Length: 457
Ligand SMILES: *[C@@H]1O[C@H](CO)[C@@H](O)[C@H](O)[C@H]1NC(C)=O
Ligand SMILES: *[C@@H]1O[C@H](CO)[C@@H](O)[C@H](O)[C@H]1NC(C)=O
Ligand SMILES: *[C@@H]1O[C@H](CO)[C@@H](O)[C@H](O)[C@H]1NC(C)=O
Ligand SMILES: *[C@@H]1O[C@H](CO)[C@@H](O)[C@H](O)[C@H]1NC(C)=O
Image (cartoon, rainbow, N blue to C red; front, side, top):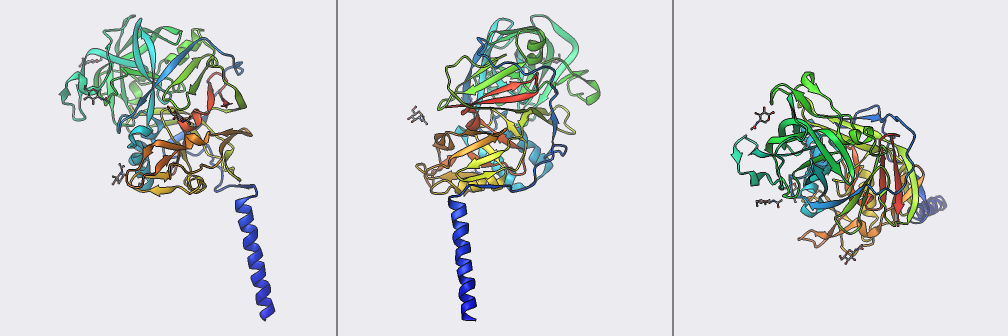
C-alpha cells in the first residue's frame, strides 16, 4: 500500500518534471483551435482569394516611390482596420469585453499612427491619407460645408482638413453622379465626382475619377485634405441620383487610382510598403521595391486574400482589406500553428492576435505582462525582456525586433508600466499592424494575387 503510494507519487513527480522541462526548454508545436475555414464569414467580413491576372512581378528597386509621413492619431480620428472592425463589432453587438478592448486601445493616443502621402492633384501638391482599406480617392472642395453629426454647420477649420482645398475637376465634373462614404469611425463625406490628373511618387494617372467633398462630418488631423484609397479594387462608392438616395441599385463602380495606374501602363500591378523603424515615417514604392539599401533576411510569398466588409443596411459603409493566412506564430520555444486570416494594415499600430495567443505571449515577457482593464490591453515593466517572437509565413520566420514589442512612450500613469505591441483581437479578424510592418518590406502584388515579404535586418 505504502509502496504503491510512493510509486504513484514518484510517477507524479517525474511527470511534473517532464512537464516543466517541456514548457521551459524543449520546442513545442501546438494548435489552440481548428484552422479558420475561409468559406465562413468572420464577424461581418467575408474572405475571397484574389484572382491572379498575370505572373508575379520581378521585385526590383523602382524610382517611383513616395515618403509616407506618420501622423499621430487622436481618439476618433482613425481610419484603420481597428476602427472599422470595432464598428462592426458594436453593430453586431458581439462580446462586450472584446469590443471594449478594441475601443480602448484606439483611445491610446500615441499608439495610433496613420500615414500621409503627398500627391499632385491637377498639379497642385496635396497631402492625402494613405488608406489600404478603401478604394475611393477624394479631396476637400473649396467652399465645402463642415457639419457635425447632427448636420449643423461649423467653421471649415472645425473639420480639420489641411489646405489647399481643391476648386474643381481638371477634366470636368460627371453629371448626375456623386460619391458618398461612411467610415467605421462614423465620419461622412459626400460631393460631386469628376476627372482629375493624380500623380503620386512619379506615377501619374490622367483623368482619374475622383471625388470632391462638398459636405463633410470629419475629425481631421490638419495634415491631410482627403484620402488616397488603395484597397483591392473591389469596392468604390459612386452613386447616381441625389445625395441621400444611395442604394445598391444606383451604385456605379469605377476604376480606382491603383487600377488606373496599372491599366494606363505606368506601373507593374504592385506596390510595396516599408515603415521606417523607430520613426513614424515610411516609404511606398509603386511597381517595385523602395530603392533602399536594406539587408534582407528571409523571403516568403503567400496568397492574397481579400476580406470584404459591406455594412448592411448601410450600403455606403464599405471596406476591403488585404489579408493573408500565416502558418502561425512562434515565441521562445513555442510554435502555434493555428491558421487564421490576418489583415495587413499600416493604419493599425499593434498586432491583434487570437486571445489565447496574445495571453501566452504576454505571459512570456520576463517579468510577465499584465492585462490592464482600464486600457483593455497588456502592459509590462518598461525594462522587461520580451520573448523572441516571430510570425511564420510560408515556412519562413519573420522575427520582430524585441525593441518594437514594448512602447517606451506609452506608459500607464498608475503602474508606470509600458504597453506591449501585442493585443488580443477578440473574435477576429486579426491584424498585422506596424509592429510587423516595421520589420519587413511588404509587397502587395495585386496583379498576381500574392503578397511577398522581405525580412529586414
Ligand atoms: C454637393 O455636390 C452634390 C453633388 O454634385 C450636389 O448635389 C450638392 O448640392 C452639393 N452641395 C453643396 C453643399 O454644395
Ligand atoms: C486642428 O486645428 C484646429 C483649429 O486650429 C484645432 O482646434 C484642432 O485641435 C486641430 N486638430 C489637431 C488634430 O491637431
Ligand atoms: C476603457 O473602457 C472602460 C469601459 O468602457 C472605461 O471605463 C475606461 O475609462 C476606458 N479606458 C480608457 C483609457 O479609455
Ligand atoms: C529610438 O530612437 C531613440 C532616440 O530617438 C533612441 O534613444 C532609442 O534607443 C531608439 N530605439 C531603438 C529601438 O532603436
